[in-house]
Amino acid sequence: MKIGFIGLGNVGGKLAGSLIRNGHDVTVRDLNPELVAEYVARGAKEAASPRELGEAVDVIITCLPSPAASAAVAEGEDGFLAVMRPGQVWMEMSTTDYAEVLRLGPLVEAKGGLFMECPVSGGCHRADTGNISIFAAGPREGFERVLPVLTTLGRRVLHTGDWGTASQLKVMTNFLCTAHLVALAEALTVCKAVGLDMNTTYEAIRISSGNSFVHETESQVILNGSRDINFTMDLVSKDVGLFDKIAQETGVPVEMSPLIVRLFKEGEAAYGPREFSPNIIRRYEEPVGIKVLGTGFPDQMVDDEPEEQGYEVVPRR
Image (cartoon, rainbow, N blue to C red; front, side, top):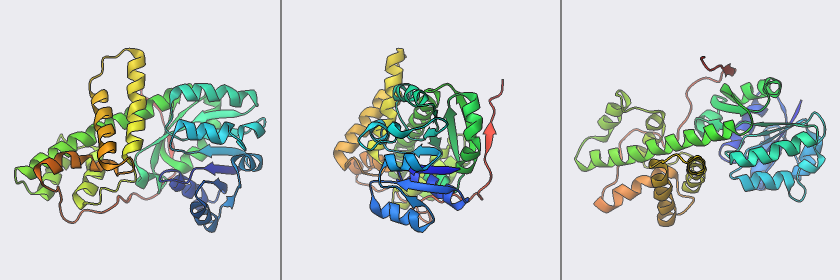
């Protein structure tokens, strides 16, 4: 099976690396020629355009920063959709708008292809080791067809149902992640302001009911001072904005998601759209003139779990 991978950014590059590391025949495409050269040196082939990639592979995987970027590589000049053929697969692994998934899926089916949306969750450090979680939506027979690829890319794979459900669940989890991040930023700053030792504070949260995945990852790079979680404020704004859009469309009177959308839009304005997302803590540090730091924490997260073969997660009924 020949696999094409478009998008070698913070998440996509690590996912493509898992395919290469596990012996797959991989062709890559990215607008950054330095990234392409890096993956070619690791064993991948190079495509000059999405169209050229589509002509050369059996499975196309996209992992891009926005719905517009995904649409461009599929439908734009030199896009791959024009050359899709019966039996070919497009796995969309970007965090995207579920309405865009519902629009694109039938276009692939009209070509006789299989469209699966497969966003990931769990952080760049887990994408790097093949231990990330994957939500996959599309027909059950299509899910079973792509499962061997998904279990190479990730550890836990959940079939979520029809097109659109994976994207809806992904932006929900990103909303929760961001809510935890904002709460931790406030909590850590208050603890620092009152004079608590930050290493002790970290452990108090970790062993208590206040713990979360976000604390065990993002709090560490906050306390290191790097704030480098390979994710930026503009991407948070996009993801939480997609969740808030779903809430508004369904008429749910949410209160937290509009607040978080506002906080990160203000963060983008104050610190720049490409500022690392954990630096939302600056919103709380700077007015009181403190820096929330500990000692001995890593500057980036590294997954210390060994790479293992992935498996399907089956919901309890």
